[in-house]
Image (cartoon, rainbow, N blue to C red):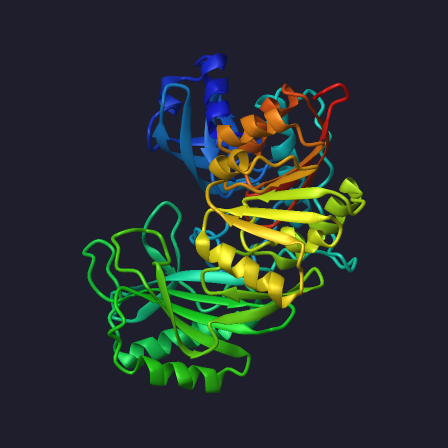
Amino acid sequence: MNSTNQDWQASGQASGQASGQADWQQGALVEVTVTDLTDRGEGVGRVGERVVFVPDTVPGDRAWVRLLRVKANYGDGKLHELIEASPHRCRPHCIVADKCGGCQWQHIDAAYQRQAKQNLVIQALQRIGGIAEPPVDPVLTEAIDGSPLASLGYRNKASYPLSISAQGQVQAGYYQKGSHSLINLNRCPVQDDRLNPLLAEIKQDIQQQGWSIYNEARHTGLLRHLCIRIGRRTGEQLLTLVSTSEKLPGIKAQAETWLQRYPQLVGVCLNLNSSRTNVIFGPETRCLAGLPYLKEKYAGLELHLKADTFFQIHTEAAEALLPIIRRELNLQGHELLVDAYCGIGTFTLPLASQVQLAIGIEWQSAAVEQAEKNAQLNQVSNVKFYQGKVETLLPELQLNPDVVLLDPPRKGCDRAVIETLLKTQPERIVYVSCKPSTLARDLKTLCTGGYQLIRVQPADFFPQTSHVESVAFLQRSTGSN
């Protein structure tokens, strides 16, 4: 069973305090058998009746755990020494996996990761959604061509914070778990292998140019992030530096040098972000050399992706959901489809060929502009895109759709969106979710308002992490208006 930390904390409170006080204090070394995983990716065990959360562990591990923080009924620990390893434990593919905060589950074999993610969805639907026997399929494992979906080398985009080491060397990587201390990387096993040369070599060029590196604490310096993305099908690459200012001496000449050095690099961009924030991209992106976008092939379409365009990290996994959506909907060509939170039309454009009209709603104006350009590029004429908040536009447009596709952010749908759906009662709803708990919350409301949950298909968009994507299919119940 995979539950949230809050659920396990409640479990500890309900179980009482059977273990002795001597074992339950900060710094104590305790023996723990790990029995579960939380939705944050931590292993769960008990000391007496108290719950302990231990990162870097797997169900089946028996280990010595150092208690780092203790409350009355639960605590946080750190793996000190394995006594007996779980059969689901494997050797991480990254030499800094135990330090880097980019992945949580490299020490867990891929098959068990998928099983755990299916359980995350099931438990959320039972616990939060109130669905006793949720119809959740096993996690999707095959691409549309039948090949296995990759669990390594799958990421088509990476944004690396930059820093300066104690020796004055430019570093790029991910922050250490629970800190803002950077783990320097020259390669990353979860990103597309073709991007590794850029990660290793661009740092050296930044060092030689002498450009200053941003200091988050002091809000000084220039370069903040190194961002690289690739078209998985085309191989085209796009490099973007994020800076507080455009005043980088020699930047355009260096950009031209990068284009000549890397044959697959089609563009070099500079994004300006001078705000004191942890948001990566600022509002303005300038193309320094080449093109401001790369081309990607996706679901039979050609898409143009800019530096800050939102596009699913795992191209093949996202694409593999489309045949499932098509089969489940069995579209006949006369339907009105509304794609809420449509982004650049990742689902709108591929599904448009099977409906009379597809309408996309998206808050970000740049995404709407990109969606419209991609529609023109692929000669998809039966689509309309509207810019604005879904909770505002969906009721304002006064549509009567046959199918509504929801793909909200992690916080789930705004209450006004759910209320509009319950009022208009489209025949079918497809809910694409990146967080099981908010999916379960929204499904509970929809299922008590006239809808039946037909099927849920989880998909592993982020292997080596505890994140799980899923798509839920709902049908308007017989007799509902």
